[in-house]
Figure 1: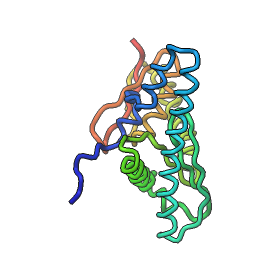
Figure 2 (figure 1 turned 90 degrees about the horizontal axis):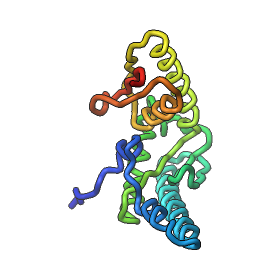
Figure 3 (figure 1 turned 90 degrees about the vertical axis):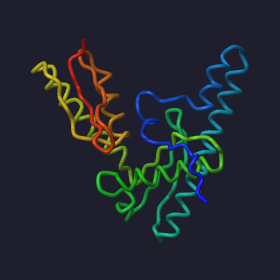
Figure 4 (figure 1 turned 120 degrees about the vertical axis):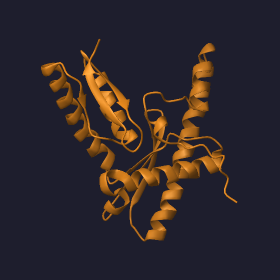
Length: 197
């Protein structure tokens, strides 16, 4: 029987309204004592690294089943667990516009959830796809900002995944005179960039 009570670790965890994990809650409470923050922070970091190790083991098993070769690195970056897979012949794991990668990330998050009992903000990257896509999206965001500043009208971007929207929001929020928000429903959720009030 399938357990339907498993919470989805979906795009809302990648958006700007990220709910803090238990480890992040511990970090904020730990600031009361001088030694507390270091101990709590180390514990939070080690828990995040454990999540990346669990996900890396899951991905490694998947690569073995598929008979794909790839080097797997597990790390913690930006306060979240990260698993990077590098090697040749991995494009099938990315899929069209990263759709397969998003599905694999969801499966890896569920593998972490099954072992830890708590949702994960794990980020999975294959073949440097996310790093390259982040650069492309920065250019798209800057272009949208230029249009908004030039014409004073809102610009609606194409539908994007949660990861892609977060990348665009980060770029837009770093610029003055403009703001961005997401609208619509998955899979057609998109960003609107408009002049700041």
